[in-house]
Amino acid sequence: MNKKGADFLTKKTLPSEVFIPEDWNEEQLMLKEMIHDFLKKEIHTLPEELDASKDLDYISGLLDKSAQLGLCGLAIEEKYGGTDLDFNTGLLFTEAMAPGFSFATTIGAHVSIGSLPIVYYGNDEQKKKYLPKIATAEYKAAYALTEPGAGSDANSGKTKATFSNDRKYYLLNGQKMWITNAGFAHIFIVFAKIEDDKDLSAFIVEKTFGGITLGDEEKKLGIKGSSTRQVFFNECPVPLENLLGKRQEGFKIALNILNSGRIKLAAGSIGGIKFALNKSITYSSERIQFDKSINKFSAIQHKIGEMVRLIFASESAIYRTGKNIDDKEKELENQNLPKNETKLKALREFAIECAILKVYSTEALSYGVDETLQIYGGMGYSTEAGVEMGYRDARITRIYEGTNEINRMLSFAELMKRAFKSKEINLQKAGRSIPKIVFKRSLPFQKLTTYKIIENFKMLFLILTSYTGKAFGMKLADEQEIVMDLADIMGEAYIAESVYLRIEKLKEKNVSQSEIELKESVLNLQLYVANQKIIQKANIIIDSLPNTKNRSLRFIVKRLTPQLAINPTETRRNIAKHMIENGEYTW
Ligand SMILES: Cc1cc2nc3c(=O)[nH]c(=O)nc-3n(C[C@H](O)[C@H](O)[C@H](O)COP(=O)(O)OP(=O)(O)OC[C@H]3O[C@@H](n4cnc5c(N)ncnc54)[C@H](O)[C@@H]3O)c2cc1C
Image 1 (tube, rainbow, N blue to C red):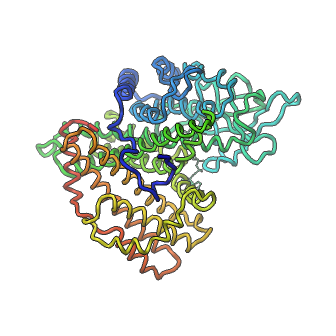
Image 2 (tube, protein in one colour):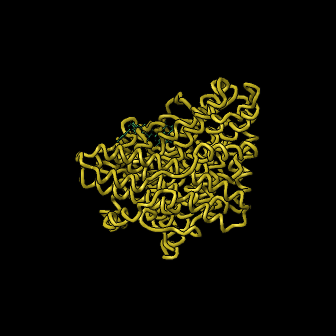
Image 3 (cartoon, protein in one colour):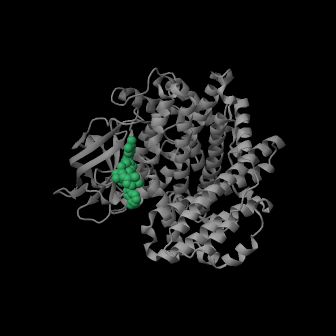
């Protein structure tokens, strides 16, 4: 079946159509294991946190060692020296790398934003010249989009490319900021405007071209072991053939690369929270207070259970989306589109899901590292235990690859674009059938099937979107708090559905009844929490509408989100106890 981005809002997905983490094959799990072994040996044995202002050689050497294991060419086609793994396995790679602390950012920038622009947009000459060296890490890569005056508003950058007198070169002038890997990068993907163009173009710039100077290492809150610097271009000569893609295509390139970066960051966040959870489980079993291990206290179990729920929910949706991207790529390949285009179009198709996942998973990570520090108590505040580093490192994930505010607004704006400009999604049709459906769905919550509960979430999102659209018209985009709440409701619906589909698919597999029951209890908890959040956000939206006579809307919210008959406290404790007994996150 052909899948389309955001069609989860209006269409039913069958469990057999989704990928679930229980589907990973032996080879994929071995890759994960191999990465964990590498990190244990090269990073977890280090006496201190890496610091880019002192350890630059060691950090860039880690990239060389990763390349020797084949880890720097996973997204690169075989003919250019890589292994060309599918997108979903690439996400697993990112998850596995997360316990490498700030090195996860270093290698992420190299294999993702620093090199994918060439993989996706390079011509054959450019690929031949650069990709084999990126795969062996002989060339280390960086991505230079942000400027002091152009962050979220990336297309407003001032870096300029003018033609040299002999018109053989572009001369780059300008300043980039916050550039990961800048301290040792050999090539930079630089975004700049040619002459007086309105939109950015992208260039492959070698450090040796000249006219490039670097600022000092930034002193940062976290990810201190990743190099972050300003990069200055002063009459830097870039050969004409190093224009990447077409002139003024740079902004599109930047956005498409960020789509992929967003879901990768989500996968990395899952790796981070799993690592934090496992540390929490170990520490809480060893730490004795009031003559008991602190993991016997239900306040601690709450935190552990909540982390498990967030991991389970995020990973269900992340790998479902990753596989959808792979499937879309294959579908487009069958239409004989060039390989570059199929990858890009497939990613573009799921831009809404990528933005949802970036927000959900990075905020899950924030919860996980914060509560891990809390479980460690005073020890968590000390550098000795290493968990304060995770707390600091995680904070950046809500800022880069587009801040979470920008991603929330982007997911909703993209949906509106597809619904009203390109008419790819028929939200209006879904909206027209609302009153009848709402009336029908007046059963108490506990009598609804799980799938109906999720359908109700989607329905409520569509109704609220329709009301707010009518209330604010084109000015809805200015009501950012409302847009962000709508984006969150849409996100909760997608995540809840992904968990549901995972359980349903699992029932068809050869797994024990006890495993199904426990995982089903995570689904129930997920629905309970999502329901509470959705009620709260829906009511805030209603109270913010200009028309105060919104009784019918309140009635609809009540109808679609009645109480769910589960005991969240007991459920969460049981989930936590299972992981505590096993000593780690076992799923
Ligand atoms: C450690 C680190 C590494 C990085 N690595 C790279 C890299 O390798 N390459 C690269 O190009 N960049 C990199 N960045 C830059 C990063 O992508 C930007 O910091 C990020 O996009 C946000 O831009 P900004 O910092 O200018 O914040 P701003 O855009 O100034 O945003 C500040 C605040 O305003 C909010 N805001 C902005 N616009 C709006 C709006 N329209 N509506 C509502 N709220 C808004 C934001 O959400 C945020 O809360 C890195 C940054 C850091 C800190």
